Image 1 (cartoon, one colour):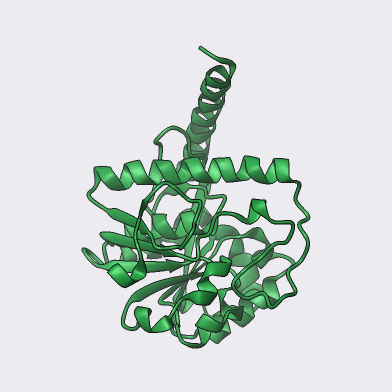
Image 2 (image 1 turned 120 degrees about the vertical axis):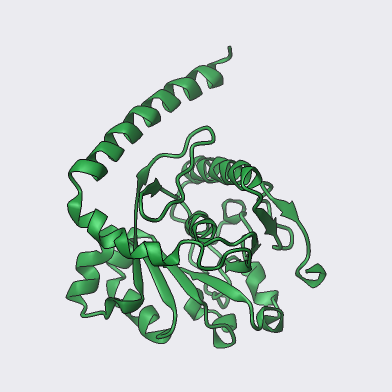
Length: 264
């Protein structure tokens, strides 16, 4: 057994122990969080057997013809509202999982929610106090409690339970889509290559991309965790007959079958 395997086994033991503790706390202590996520039962298998498109904010999304997504069910994420495509596509669901939307960018979170009044927003339970303080109507707000670690093929997608935490919002979208019953999930704007650029580039940038602030080493470590979470989701989806396709041109995300949006 090599050193990498030894480290992985130690890490998995730690993650397993943490998950047991986290699930205990959720079941017997975190009553507020349990109450917040009860509403999610209304989303279970709501789109049984249908397909959806998850729009990441990678630069490739600039080249997407929005006509392809007419009459399709879509997920938006993060600052997609700044992009050109948001003028043509109003997402059915919008995921805001990053802590910054509940702290330094909380006013902007309100801006996004107001921009799409008919969209269902999915946020973490820790956003509840911020949403209440901002006076946001919670009718279209759905909360997720995500506080377990992904390791090996361990995945929890039930939105009424303690879900698998995600380091990337697209992962959270996929987990939500599976819970909603989608049988075909298509990824767009998931370039998965920002570590290869000195600039942080998104589909909404106009030659004003900020310089990287995260070290390459740390970002690659994060990318590795995200990649293995995608591999686990691929295994999970295969077990339950769900197909996930990556439609992003030149994407480095290799977990899913690739195809072109023109083909589907």
